[in-house]
Image 1 (tube, rainbow, N blue to C red):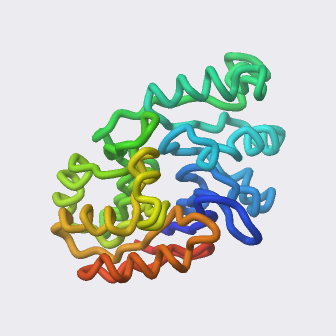
Image 2: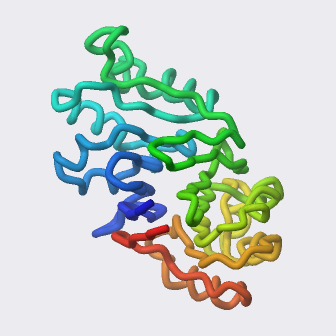
Length: 254
């Protein structure tokens, strides 16, 4: 597997893009604003989008992606999400009011887009790659993802706060090499992190104490304007793993 970070910010400003990750050439993990930097050729090669949750910073480019590439494709784009997330997308995004329902265009038998329901803990295999939804704890129904090539695994938590159920699974992954985990707020905004079900550096430290594996740890979803402060606090709070800041364009091979 080859994973390329297209966007990993908690907001937009300058070169910052919201969450979107390209797996090999044909799978997106979330579809935030980073997707917009791909070429037409790259966009048309995407067959699958795995969605952690329905918040706009993670799904903003799905409507534009489908609309842009449909004349270049001979099969529908598959949106993989849990049943509650699929229903949110149906009712609030692809509803003919916010955007056309591409599961009905050009017709229901040959649509430009289709949904595939995910179940937490049940792996989806695509070309020898195993993608498993993991439990997340957020303000809307949400998951993270475990990506397993056989040679190695990467876990992306998605948006989450304190989450014991996640670590129960992660601690059983023998070939875990990388962990990408969110930290959206600085410690001064801990109350906001708790309310919005995100993490701050002190909470991140509490979560990583539950981790019994020794992967490389990368921090994502940092808010513009607080990046340096938050990463400084991460360094002060987290002593064991020396987390690094996730970067746009970063590539993971595993």
